[in-house]
Length: 339
Image 1 (cartoon, rainbow, N blue to C red):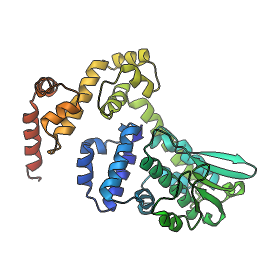
Image 2: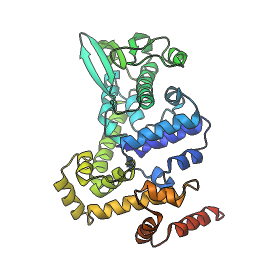
Image 3: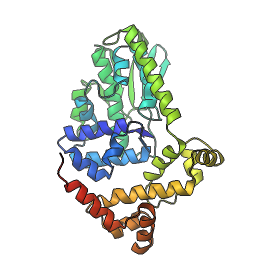
Image 4: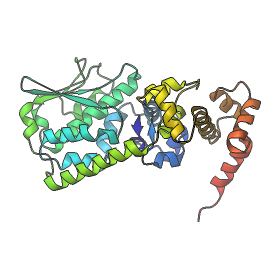
């Protein structure tokens, strides 16, 4: 799962590239309120879809590299602040790994030390589409290299490697990585002398860094304890591609628990799997109906209904409105003048 904080950064990057955020959000079918929800999360597969959409809308094949270039210093706070105010580069790297849960469930890189060298290896999956894999490699390596630049250590980086062929815009790699980028390498990441881990971070501040660590750990604890299984499972269901016949067992595996435990957690939280599925389908239906280009027939098909009539009945049961009534209600609300 990926934090909506990361999604908001993606939205900002698309806007910085010249595409109005309203156009991007409408194309994603994300509800604006969901985008702004602090603790909401997306399944990684849905985030991958947003990345591909962002690349298509911006028309920028090097969108990953350019996004890091335009990223504000405080965009990833408190993670950015932890990195900046650590005592050493090594502490900065540990801070990224310790606080990554605020940004997503999966680590983006791992640190290996061998023979006096440090290798930062980007973690990727064969399930990632090629453009997404390259985007994730670009933002991770460019972000790490940016940390080196701010510590004035970029000249000491031995190699910056990518486990894929040079793209058409390889000149951008040359510019951003100052001629150090190498392609068709065994791994994606960077390598430097272990001694650099003891180099000073950009703005070392022991007391501030400790306060930020406490704050970050508290946020992570709140995130993992406050977000209910119902909400986590619902978010997973909402972002599954058609057909949406997701089993309870597969949802439980995605949440790192057993089917029996998930059923017990849902019961304790006052709901059931079938009710949660209905809530997820209702959300998807509303999201589709907000897109004027999507017909009611297409929405019914998106949700797996055999015909429009059965979808009408289900939507009326979920919301108390027919699909047409809901669409007209939302159109009127959007046209109402704001005070």
